[in-house]
Image (cartoon, rainbow, N blue to C red; front, side):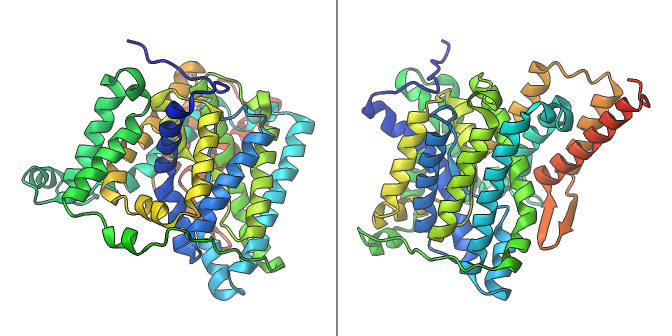
Amino acid sequence: MEKRTIGIHEKLPLLQSLPLSLQHLTAMFGATILVPILVGVDPAIALLMNGIGTLIYTWVTKGGIPAYLGSSFAFISPIILIATQHGGFSHAQSGFIFFGLFFILMSFVVKKWGIRWIDVVMPPAVMGAVVAIIGLELAPVAIQQAGLSPGGTQVGQVVQAFTLDNKTVFVSMFTLLIGIAGSVMFRGFLQIIPILFAVVSGYILALIMGMVDTATIAEANWIALPTFSLPTYDPTAILIIAPACIVVLAEHISHLIVTGKITDEDLMNKPGLHRSLLGDGISNVVSGFAGSPPNTTYGENIGVMAITRVYSVWVIRGAALLAISFSFIGKVSAAISTIPTAVMGGITILLYGVIAVQGLRMFVEQKVDFSKNRNMVLGAITFVIGVGGAAIHIGTVELKGMALAAIVGVVLSLIFWLFDKLKLMND
């Protein structure tokens, strides 16, 4: 039986919408609170501003783009550098505000000159590879969380799991199998919450096996106010943050394109890339003034939509409201934060794999002809740069994975476009 698709503008009854929103929240929660933990700020402020930022984003985009904004990993290195050597986190906040203003400026550029240039700088052969790399570069994280880290004896680990000698692998594989079974076998309402069902099932199993830190929940206060901080203007911090803005711009465009492919909507034109950039930019300006790390659209939530076919912006807004509420309810946020990495590893194997496959889907739907040397070279180089471990440094920012692959793909595309103009290329 074909799964029912829940459209972008469709509003479900509260009792149906609530678990769908919780599903999105659990998918992004682990990653979004990890960023503030790594840079030494209160995770609750990130959760609060993620929720507020998502509501701002959906308002600016007129409820036309189902995207959740979570904490960006691209800024971790420059934030740590600024926090430890250039005045502290409040100085980094001026860089976050600059990032938001940069996106706002880019939104006006796109509105003025349109998006046709994207077909030149990121043709389907590059874009499909970049989207696939988004999932592929996250895959090792899922494998590590699942206890199947590279260099280990995977077969031995799985055998240990079934004898309960390796709890991490056992719980992760149990969670993954529930997610797979739910995605292909569930019927009725359950078929649109397989991720939530798998995470809850894995959590219960982990709790039974003593893998959940219940002390953290017990010690948490019921009411806990997030920690706010005001920014300190610092031109040096802005210069350190600036290179990461290009990385997140490439990520933003890629995420919007793949979301459009999943939802079968031309989101780049309606409501438009310019509105998407504007909403993200305003969100980051507000977050910068409040003391939260920068936001970005989240691949985890794109994966949830691809599996469930629930694209409703109202569900995304519900997740944002839950995030805002949980940022003030200490015990609830503590309970979610105690979801073992084994559970998240199991489910993210599925989520990140789905994202990677969406890139391959783009090759098919855009009818990319790899018998043409141009497309073959663009796809090949982009893939190898993205998954081969290549990295370069621009100041304090390390470019690697999807970001570096996107930049290399853009440069090659522009070179080929120039060759076409000069009549130097035959394909």
